[in-house]
Image (cartoon, rainbow, N blue to C red; front, side):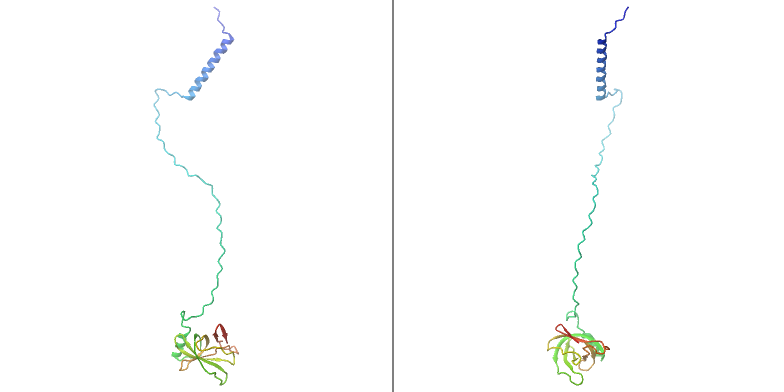
Length: 197
């Protein structure tokens, strides 16, 4: 008995249909995977929150601090002893007087108590009584043959540096000038911002 040979057109239709069915089956398998009925159901592990990672910012270059210009130091004038700051040398003079000591350089501040007549015996000396800050008084003998006269009056404040000599009336301060031979320590009298020596 002779076999019927399918026509070419029918064969192509059959192959095309099979191809379409195969593609459909393949797509269905990808979208809905089949689970065997006897396979145990998988247990989903509880979700664990992953801690959020902090945002990483790129490091920035730190700007160097701006240095401010240093403040100019204002020099303070040298402080002269004042009545509030110290005794203006009165303690030293008092000690020298009480111990009968002479030939000692002193540096004192005080007020002119009274002006005496010049000493004209030998070298001329301008003379006045100086009251120190503790009330002690001394005679100041200022050589006006070696330096100029100090234009003082009673009540004026003066600064005197010279050599103390003991006497029973309170003591004497002399050598209130430069030594022309340069052998003795120089003294002076300062009055109204001017130095006389």
